[in-house]
Length: 424
Image (tube, rainbow, N blue to C red; front, side, top):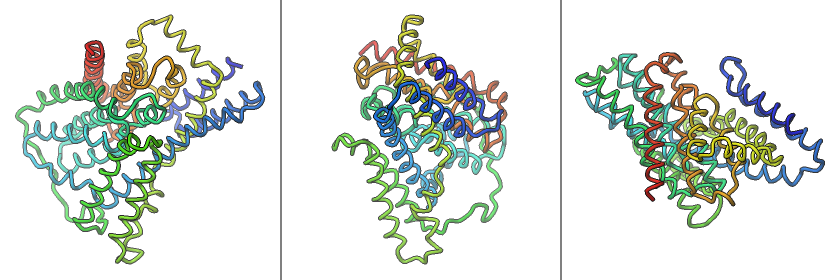
């Protein structure tokens, strides 16, 4: 049975990894893989209702959290809330603009997800920079900064959120433990590209009147929804710490508050005028393909966990490699090629909380490695794929111009984390 399960999982994983060449959405092989794996596992072992219910419960918590967070981000965007940040970025010096974009992306992605942050910041760069070559370098910085920023926050990256909900990390510990390594990760590319851009002046594109769709919101409404949305997202870890309830309860509570606030500030508008500004409309716009992918891959990985295949793999790695830091570093490098969600899901099944309690070296370093390793190749993260689509970045351009910088940043951050952990 084990060989059959592993074979099916590897085939499904390969289909996910080669989503773009195959032109098959990764959700399809994830769902097919989950269905086949559970069917075979049930056929060989008999009753699996209890194990399936356990896996479904943990998967549902992640899905509910992601749906709530995505809806909050969508409704802020619908109100042009992110203009609160972009309108304040004004400089004529290229190096200053580069650092502003890098740091805004780094901190914004800790509150939003790195995919949304990348889309927002690349849209900003398109409004600020006329030269395509300049925008491509800025896009590279945005990808690295978004992934680095998401790694040190419990709500900034899907994989970090998975570890947080699973109990492998706690909110305050991951911020304290991974912030400085993540900062080093982005500082290296920023310094190198700054040297390349020294003395350059920002060339802004010619503005065209009404060049963007107006959402019909007032400055007050935009600012209110931005600060309310960001504030509520930041409050979720605090809610979990104070109540000890799962994070999905906090995000749903926050969604309800923002929903009520939106209804109140738009209560005097006509239905047609406010329809696209509601949480209901935001829920229709969230990325359901990604949600379905998470369901499929998490349920697929769960069968390998219940069949003790992952535990056996962990034991083999410990014997073959022997160094925990090296094992996690390899996972991070692998996330540049394959999706980091199944990598982290598999790691959670390989190592138990009994042997590696919450906030231990393994889990924190995994959050850093899986979150930032995807920046090394443009296809290694959702942020990279989004940037690739928006700016039409060629794979080999990224490899030649950005990959080495991302790799050096990744290794620098890893060395900082290991050094700080050993010093403690």
